[in-house]
Image 1 (cartoon, rainbow, N blue to C red):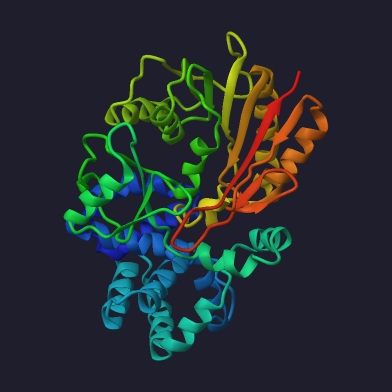
Image 2: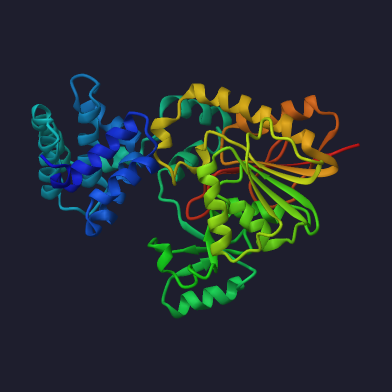
Length: 429
């Protein structure tokens, strides 16, 4: 069968299988999206992201229905897609079952279509019991379950529930062009439901998701899409006017742009090892009509890069497990492995060591991750301070997040921001 003739569910199953085999969701979506008709793309997205978001919850409620555990990836994808439609969407049950069983047949999984059909019919007869069971699962791979339970015993249940939610769509208004209140008025005139963020003074949460390029002011650079907790970065920084600043690990440029919207640095070096993703930095700055005369975009490895002379401020959004942004990137549940954490922490340490050498005495380094694991955050900072007597923490006086021995941790919050960690450090003489 021609791949363009597969039904929508078959396209979703193919996408889920690719993620199970280690591909990132964003790369698979780019390959598959053009095969899906314009009309079906919204549903394709919802089913794919929804299945990944509920993957381990669906796995947990499926186990009791099987005589032996599933060791077949195709069967898993077919089953979870069917279950997700029955338990989490308004798609009529008969359509969910028949379309999913047909998809299994189209993809050549005919032998397992009978089992898929039987399990989906069983669940459809006891929907409310299975919905309750689904809501009561933690929905995490076992290694992450153990780590989060250890790191956050008091907040654990809430974290699990929040990571299963759909993250809100949050904008950051470009202050160079328009104030937040003015943009809220424009949205109101267009009858677009929105509310101001509570922590970010330039943030707006949209009550409905949609195509952001259709929002007023997008082409003119009136706003960017950025999580509320990520917007706090520029608000924490000292005044960077006439300073030399490095945005290490800068791509795709959200923080670079926010710094330029807020300050007039003498020079801003946007550094990243990924040349392709760095292209998006200049594209974003162009759309936002931000002056690039003092911006230097550099493809380099942050573990070895050397500044021509020491700099005033370094923003280090370090590579991490991205466990704080699982709501936005649900494929992380399947892709991330427990062994990754030690490797990432070692890489963070190397980058920190090198970047510290590029910072002048009296300068500031802001260490950031989108992780909720202490090994990448507070514990990483404990090691850093123990090894660097010339480093002093600048305490973040804020009423957001949870104060740690070093730094502050924000956890994923329902209807608000993702998981982020911030620690501000001053270099002593």
